[in-house]
Length: 212
Image (tube, rainbow, N blue to C red):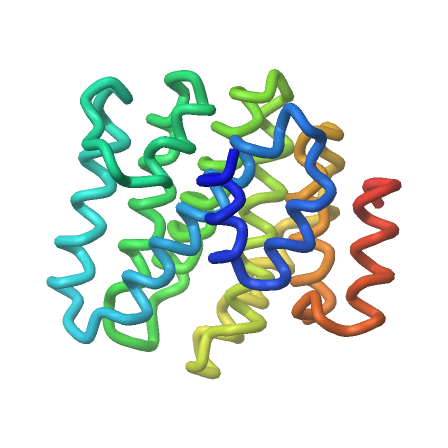
């Protein structure tokens, strides 16, 4: 478990806060998804050329498409993804989603939605791993991604497109208790909170305990 705990420290405060509300049985699979999402975000954010980002994303796509027994040793995140018990193939959609953000700004609404669908599909895969209904996880994951984009993308045109796409989503669905971290992530992103203020902590406490 020490390797997994080391990966917790790599998460931003908001994700660490959300992870705190994962039931014990869901903690490692949820941590694996959150760390993978942050790893992919870092690739897109820190690569100065789209081709370099796409090359690094392709490595992760390849790993997620093969059996875990074939993974190289020494990568703590891959070791943690074994907690998905073979269900890690669903996380390929997360890689595909992040690749849509490697294009030049302003990105078209279709690319922003494809990114959001990729994040949602990854949480649907996590839901299957945890024995929960994947449909609401897909929807809430997509809504979280759009709210997160609206709050953090730099280009004002992309912000407006993300807000418009989110407005078409309707009411956020409730997800299983095992997916409570996703509820926290969505709720904080929808309110534009980063997880480090008293208001954010109170919101997270309510969402984490009550799910609404």
